[in-house]
Structure formats: structure tokens, C-alpha cells
Amino acid sequence: MIFEIIFWTAAICIFHSYVLYPCILSILSSNKIIKFALYKDDDDLPKVSILISAFNEEEVIGKKIISIFENDYPQNKIQVLIGSDCSTDKTNEIVRTLTEKYKNLHFFEYTVRQGKGNVINNLFDSSNGNILILTDANVIFDKNTIFEMIKYYKTPKIGLVDTNMMNVGMKKDGISFQEKAYISREVLIKNQESILWGTMMGPFGGCFSLRKELFEKVPKNFLVDDFYINMKVYEKKFAGINSIDSIVYEDVSNNLKDEFMRKIRIATGNFQNLVAFRKLLLPLNSGLSFSFLSHKVLRWIGPFLIIASLLSLIILSFNSKFYLIALALQLFSLIIPLLDYILSKSSFNISFFRFVTHFYTMNLALLIGFFKFLNGVESNVWKPTKRNQ
Image (cartoon, rainbow, N blue to C red; front, top):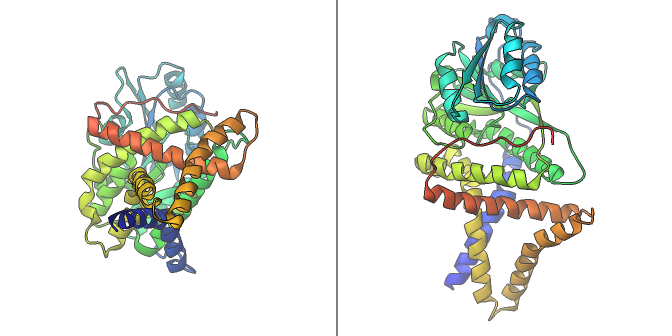
């Protein structure tokens, strides 16, 4: 009996997070839109400070800066602060050259690696905008990106606004299509959370905004700064939403190994955030706790649910044909990543296999990240994934 309870609990939790919760959101948010007071483009718009931590971004930093200053947002309302985290390529040279063209561009060079979170903390001290935009060097702005974020801040309860990331650089090989599908689904879920409760779970770390007075410096050695900042906004009882019309562009990851290492780092940071914000899981009847549990926590503990399901099925299969079949199916799904790898070596890709591989890769990264979290995080410095793969 106990093993049946373990199996069905694990199965229901996985099913809820990946299938049932998105369905609930779709039903509840059907025919609804985000309704708030909005700034118009001819209003006296708030000043924004754009904070960028850059490490060896010579391939993208120039294009990023130009995309900011070619935005339709009033130029006298934009302050750009870039911190070069001990870059060893031509990043510093490129930014210094552009400071001569753009007077609102301020450059800070660090001779010792700080880590993204620490650079952002330092740049915050030099910011003078009412709204902060935290963005990565490889995330390119559209013409209306800034305004489509900022317009929601006319409503006092809005504390944080996320962007809508569009994928570029798609390739038939690798994992770019699976990563794009995952990200697109995440954008939809976050938008529905925004509509229903104003509890968009985790902004796109490449570009999001918040009120300056709500920003709290990220603790030393915290790995997922965007989620930490997001949840601090919710602790202060402000809302966080996704702006579908605030579009940014980023190369989607195509290299499984690079993406795997990135997800391990994020997974480690996820468990840091789970400990930091565990109190927000209560009361369970609030939109915040429901979205936090359903969208994030159940996924973060996914590896343990998969292991619990597998072990309980092994025991249950001795006395039940149903559980024997279920065990066979789960074991086959675990073999799929190996089959996918073998087939990919012959340039033969099956989309379903690649999606299963992507799922198990994410969960393996979560498992490794959990043990890295238990061992303690000694540094928040990491090497960004290769640009323009």
C-alpha cells in the first residue's frame, strides 16, 4: 500500500506540474487580458536605468548598446550602466568607443572577476532611474521593448515586468527546437500567471524590469539572481507580470553540453531560492503559493519524484501486471536519451526522442545541482555560454 501511495503521489506531482497546471491556467485565463492603468507614449515617462554585466561579450555588446539607444523611448530618460567583469577580449574597447557617441552610457571596468550578481549590485549604486532594467549583453532590444515594459508602472501595485523573449539562430541539429518549445511554453505560462494573480514565476533573466525602491542586492554567491529579485518583490506584496509586447531577441541554445552545464548552475541556484523563499509556499490557498509550488517547486524536486516512481514501480511490478507495464514504459523512456544520442551520430533526429532527452537532461541537471547546493556555493562567477552558436 505504501509503495502505491509513493508511486501515485510522484506521478500526480509530475503530471500536475507539466500538464495539469498549464491546463488550469489556460482554462482560468481564457478570454482574459492584463488590465491595468498604462502610460501613453506622450506621457511624462519615468527614467530608466539599464544595468548590464558583461564578460567577454565582444561579439554582441556593440549590437546590444545600439539596440538600446535606437529604442523609441525618450533618450533623455535612459541611463545605461555597463560593468565589464574583467573581460579579456575587445569588450572594453568596444564599450569605451561607444561612450563617446552615447553620453548616457556609463562604463565600469573591473580588474577582478565579480560575478554577475555582484556587478549588478555595484551598478545599482550608480543608477538614478525610477525603474531598473536588468539585461544581458546578448539580448537584443526591439524598437518598443523599453516602453512596452515601462507602460505598466503607471499602476502602483506593479513591481516587476518581464519581457517576451523571441528565439533566433534555430538549427535542425542540436537542441535548439526543444529549447525554443520549452521557452515559448514558459512565456505562455508566465503570461497566464500574470493575468490571474500577478505572480509571474521567474522573469526571463536576460531582460526584466522593476521599481528601483523594490530592488534588493543579491546575496553573495547566489547563482540565480533574477528569481531572487523577483521573489523579493512578492515579499513586499507587489505584483509581477509578463509583457507579451515587450519583445527581445536571443540566440536559443543549441549545444546540449553547454546547456546542461548552464542548467546545473541554475538548478543549484533554484535550491538556494527554495530555502530563501520557502515561507512563500504558505498559505496554500493564495495565487502566489499555488504558482510557486506548481510551476517551480514541483519541477525542482522532479528528479526525486522520478526516482521515487521508479523504485516503487520495481517493487509493485512483482504482484501487478499494470505496474509491470508501467515499469516497462518508464524504463523505456529512460533508454530513449541513449537511443537519441546514437541516432544523432548518424544525423538522424526524432523530435519525440529529443524532447524526452531534453526532459531527462533537465532533471539530471537538477539532481546534480541539488548536490552542489548541499556542498555549498563558494562563488557566483561562471563563464557564459558561447554566443551565436
